[in-house]
Amino acid sequence: MTAANKTPTSKYMAGDIRHLINKAIQDELVNLPVTLAEIKDPVQRLNFLTKFMPFVCAPIKQVGVSTARREVGEDSIFSL
Image (cartoon, rainbow, N blue to C red; front, side, top):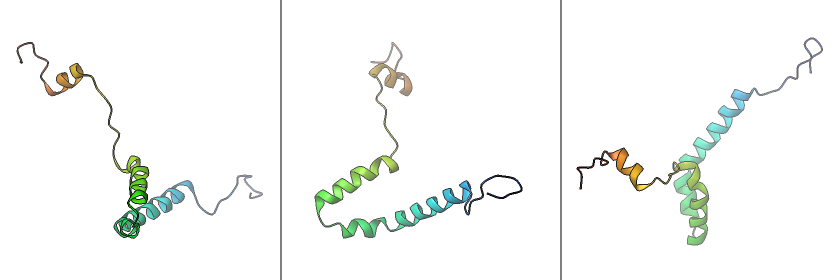
C-alpha cells in the first residue's frame, strides 16, 4: 500500500491478468493437435476430450416438439 492514497498496488491490473490468461489459452489451443497426438491411450484421449468439450462447444438445450415446430415455422394447422 502506498502511504499517500492507502490503496493496494499490484504488479498486474485485472485487465492485464485476463490478457495473460487469454494469451496462455490461445497458445495451448494452437498446440492442441500435438498434445492430442502425444496421448496414445484411447481412454485417456477420450477423457481429455470429454473434459475439454464444455469449454469449446456451446451447450444444447432441450426443447419440446411444439416449440421446435414453432421455431422452424411448421406450427400451422395446415401443415401435415
